Image (cartoon, rainbow, N blue to C red; front, top):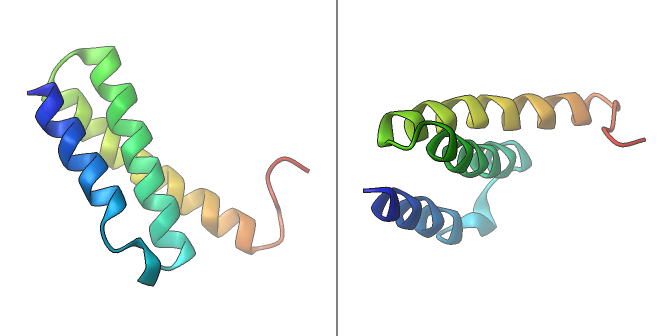
Length: 74
């Protein structure tokens, strides 16, 4: 099950990213990272889904923060 979820996430990350806004890209990267962390922590698909949701929200929030001129890392 883990390999299936990981494969789906990686496939979604590679398809159609050229027409995405920066917020969508950030949310997608956050969702992928969150899914990986959620799977590593919980060891099941429920943790991966929760991690993906939290990661997507976090990625969009970081993009919003950066667009306001508060660039992270500076």
